[in-house]
Every structure is written in C-alpha cells, then in structure tokens.
Image (cartoon, rainbow, N blue to C red; front, side, top):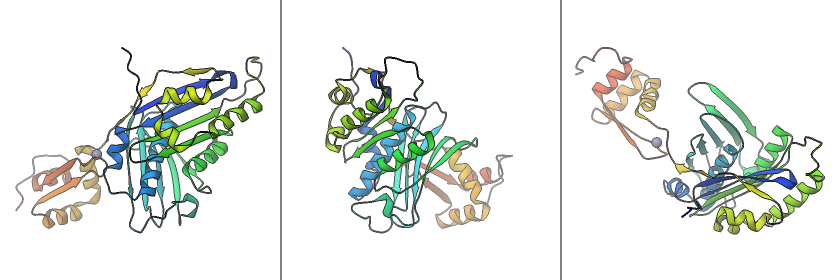
Length: 298
Ligand SMILES: [Zn+2]
C-alpha cells in the first residue's frame, strides 16, 4: 500500500503548460513541536508558523548546503523571530517578545524592524544573506516583493498557520527561454495561475492534504508532481556548540556563572529544550582549549 504523506512534507511541482514551477509545504507535528515550546500569543504564533513554512518553501527550488533561515528583529514585539530549515529537511524556530503583541501583527507597522534571509553554513562562513523589505503587512507579501526584486521574476506566495498546521505555497514563473511552442503566451498563463491561486484561502490551505489541494486548484493545468520530501522538527545544537559559545564568553563570565549556581553551568537549548551541564572541571577544560587535564580547582 502506498503511503501518502499529508503532514511534514514538501512537494515540488510543475504546471508544465503554463511554464510555472511551485512548491507546497504542509507542516503538522514539526510545527506543533515548535509552537508548543512557548506560550505564544495567537498573532505571533501565526507569524512564526508562516515563517517556518516559508523557510521550508524557499528550500524547495534551490541547491544549498547547511540551513536557510528567516530572521526578524525589531525594537518592539516581537523582539526576535527565527525560523530555519536545513538541507536535510530539519526545521526549528522560535520567537521572543517582551511587550504586548499587536493584533493584527503587521510587519509594516513594526518599529526598527529588519528581516533577513540567510543561506549556508554559519560556522564555515559560507553564507548568502539578503534583506527583505517590510513594506507589506504580511509575510507572503514581503516575500513576493523580495522575489520580484532579487530574481526579477514574479512569485505568488500563500502562507497560513494555526495551532495545528502551518502551510505555504509558492508559484514562480519559469524564466522564458523562447522557442518552446508548448508554452502559451507567458503573461496570460501567469495571470491565469495567479487567479487560480488567489481563490485559495488560509483555511483551505491548512485543511487540505497537499496532493488533493494541487489537484483542486490546478486540475485544468497539467500538474507534474515530483517525489515528495519528508520534513521533521530537528535541532542542530550540540555540546560542542555550547562549549564554543561558553568559550566566546570568556573566563570571567564562565567563572561568574559557575559561582552563581553552585559550581555548575546549565545551558538549555531554546529550540529543543536539550539540557547541557558543565561543572568546574568541564569549564576549566574548555577554557584551557582542551589541553592537559585541568588541575583540581579549589
Ligand atoms: Zn537544540
């Protein structure tokens, strides 16, 4: 029996006659893992879910190594929002807020806000970073504008999230190559696909299994579906990374942290709640750069 993935899955597809490519992402358990980490106010939870779905969507049509992240910082609430998908289909995200979150939460109303898309390996310094202008109220509008500017090609994006699911759909006009008779006039085809996509509401996007949704929307187009890619919640934290973070704090801060908590430092990953602990011997070892066994301290 064939198993059809309906949750935590990324579908790539082509609308061949129209010269359009697309990606559809639907998150269930992976999103609930992220959403359940904190008691997010509803508008912030929705934005985080949309950003998480979008981070996965954007990995659909590019070749890359490492991770693709969407990060928002602003002076008010949310203070920080971060969503990431890796080349292995591992997703994580979080948001922080101090003040009351506006409802509706409009990106174009945030104070001193910056949104960046980063692709690559942070540790290896191989990174591409692009800034997303925040002149639209919603994330889908901001990302459509980003594609228009960075790729000079129109994109249509729909994003939605509730407590159960987060989902996203992106359609991009393929670059015109000329000479292929099968593709009708580009502008007409794109307009038709935009209209079909505009009928898709958030509730339908969230509630409908991916293959069914694509058929329902584009049944008059020739839809070519590629092999679906499974997605899952996953965190890239590790003891080595936490050690590197402690080392970067320097001896004084590490000593102070040890003193403040009875000789033990506890670091809990905000993404996955993994707990890392370091006693004085561990701390001495990592500060000493992992040389000879540390002499007994105190
Ligand atoms: Zn973690």
